[in-house]
Length: 54
Image 1 (spheres, helix red, strand yellow):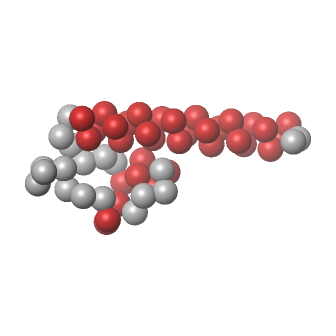
Image 2 (image 1 turned 90 degrees about the vertical axis):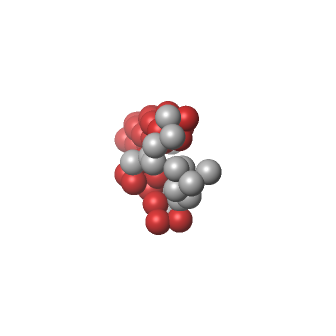
């Protein structure tokens, strides 16, 4: 793996970890996660359940 690819992988890994942390905190706080965080995690925001109904 080249240095450029390695840095891209590490940056992407940090982005996914940050999005997962933010989304989990939002769900635990009974809030809807940010659409950007859901997209980073590969989740379609339109298909994410409304946390207020459950």
